[in-house]
Image (cartoon, rainbow, N blue to C red; front, side):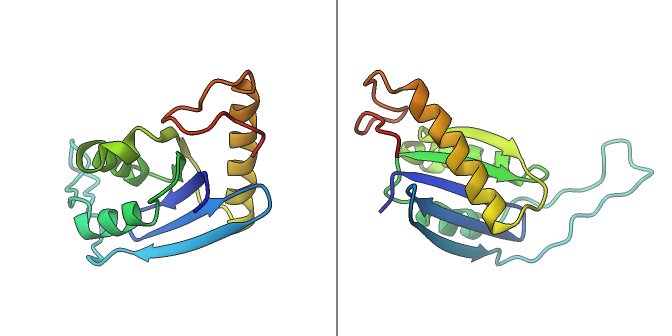
Length: 142
């Protein structure tokens, strides 16, 4: 298990990396309900939206087990819907989400680079020995 994790998620796929400064482990989860979002340009409210696939979110949450800090990335609303799912169904993981940020369709290397830089800056802010959000050992530049 690694201390940090980043998940890039949309409504069809989630890619989760648990990582340290020198290693990473990647898990890909695919949605089970391959639905298309229906939007009618004439609709005032933006069209009809299908609810998120709960089994997909559950499997993505399982890929985050054991980490202490989570960064959620992705286009559209799926990342926030997943954060809400974690807060409701897995509050222990929900508390470990340090940020939810937009990221269109970066490469795997770009996602990991962004996450490592983001956590490195968070670790520097906590270098005074305070435990990171969600508990765990004091930050050590990991």
